[in-house]
Length: 69
Image 1 (cartoon, rainbow, N blue to C red):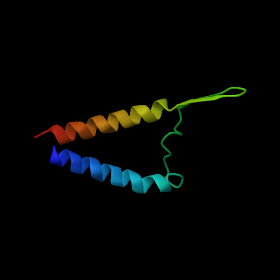
Image 2 (image 1 turned 45 degrees about the vertical axis):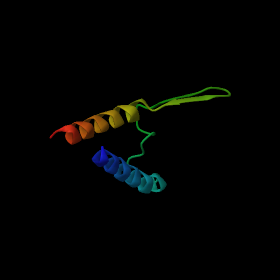
Image 3 (image 1 turned 30 degrees about the vertical axis):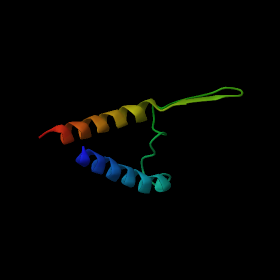
């Protein structure tokens, strides 16, 4: 349990450092090709499909790597 909390803390630290520099990164998560944006007259619907898929794959692989003993 302790190791998992340390890994989660490190992941949050890295994410916290990367978020302010998000506009300067070559890949903008949330703005990838395949993310859905529907603009109406008074509303905008936005769903990051491709971003969700990529994050799911990355988190699955990391979970698999850390759960192996």
